[in-house]
Image (tube, rainbow, N blue to C red):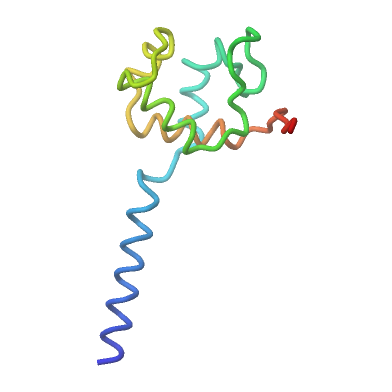
Length: 113
């Protein structure tokens, strides 16, 4: 009986870990390719060197923040005509790949306060 409970507990924990991680594992090379195709024109290839001062730096940001922002642009919950158009064709896997790619780039962001 104790072994059965242990096995059931392990199965539940394993399932919970799978559900919490969300989408399939990110493909960083696919993320890099998508960034080069779509994002680099404004945010820079590394996400740390935007082409204009009013474009945000994305390098080093939390991946869940980046993914949520892209999903919100895609769904129209965040309003920006340029970002809405850029996010609309992205698949869920593209979003995960791009978010993970940018999050792993070296950042020149700093905390001021």
